[in-house]
Image (cartoon, rainbow, N blue to C red; front, side, top):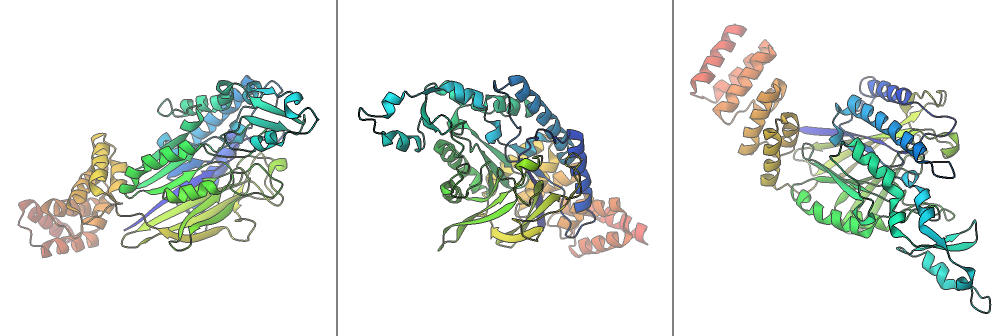
Length: 491
C-alpha cells in the first residue's frame, strides 16, 4: 500500500517595512495556491499534513530602545497568521506545526545590555602592541569576547542571565501559540524540541541555530548539548522505525566574505544521528543540498532551504522572488527506498508584494520547479512499542491518527489488523475496509468488508467482494446472512 505525506515548508515570515503583506492577503494567497496545485497542475501535489516554519517569525524592533511593544505586536500578528494557517491547512491541529526561532527573533536589546567594553589598556601591552589573543579568543565557540568593527573595540559578556534573554520574547510567543502544551527554554542547552508523529511514523527534531548569535556575532550555531540530548531521545524513536527529519534556521554555507551562516560540521552530527532530511531558511532562496558523510556507506542528509514567505525587495537575493516549499514523502510497502519530491512555489513577477499570486517556482535558480530522489527506508520498527502508542491513541478516541499509524505497519500482522478493524469501524472508512480486507483472515474481517461493500452501494463491487468471501468457506452465520443480503440486492 502506498503512503504519502506532504509537508508545507515556510520560512522567514518577517514583514519588510514599507511593503508589508497583511495576514488575510497572505493566507488567501496560500489557500488559492493550494486549490491550484492539488487539482489542476501537473504534477498534482498533496495537501499538507505537516507544516514546518524554519525561523525568523518576526522582523524584530528597528527602534534604538528595542521597543517591547513593537516586538509584541509582531508576535501577535504571527500568532494570528499561524493559527489561521493551522485552521485552514491542518484542521486546527497545532500538534502538526513545527516552529523554531531565527536570527530576527534574537532581541539585541539584551545582548547589548549584557556586554561591557574592554578597556584598551587591556588589549595593548605597555609597548602599544596589540594582544592577538583577544582576537583569537573572540573567534572561538563558547567565547564571551566579541569584536565590534563599528567601534573598533572588544566587548565582554559580563552577565549571561541577561544575554540568555535574547529569545525571551520568542519563548513567550511559543508558549502562547501552543497554548501551554509546549514551552521554550531561554537556556541555550535546552533550546530544542522533538515533534513525533506516530500516525506518519515520522519525527521532526527542531533546533535553535542562534546559539551565541547577537548584535556583534551574526553566525549560526547549535549548542552541542542540544544535539547530544536529541541523539539520546531519538534512540527509542528510531527503534520504532521512524523517519527522522530536522529543522534549524541558518544556511550551512556562504561566500568568503559572509559570516552569517552555520558551519556544516553540524550536518555530520545529524547524519550520525540518523536524520535523513533537513529544513532551513535564512538565505531567502530555495536550494537543495546533498551532503554526504561516508562515501563507502553512502550515509547522507538531504537539506532543503525555503525562500522568504514575506520578505520585501531589499531582502531578496538578486533574481529571486518570495518562495515556499512543499515536500512529498512516499513510502511504498516492500520497497527499500522512500521517494521524496521537492516542489517550489514562487510569487509571480506580475503580482503585487502586498497581494501575492503563487505559481511553480525555481530550485536554486534552475529552470525546474520540482525534483525527486530516493532515500533509504529506516530499519523495521519494533512493532510492540508502536502498538502501545496506537492503543493510547485509540483510548483517546483519536481513531484517525491511530489508523494512519497502523497503515505504516505490517498489514499481515494479526494485532495490526485487529486494531485497524476497530479504527475503520469508528471512522466508517468503508473504502479502506475494501482495500485492506478483501482477503480476510478472520470472520470479523469478512463481516467488516461485506458490510463496507453494502454501505458503499456499488452492486458490482458487492458481488465481487461476496464471491471472494464465499471462496473462504466461512461458516459464521453472520457472514452467510450478509452474503444472502448481497445476493438479494444484486439479483
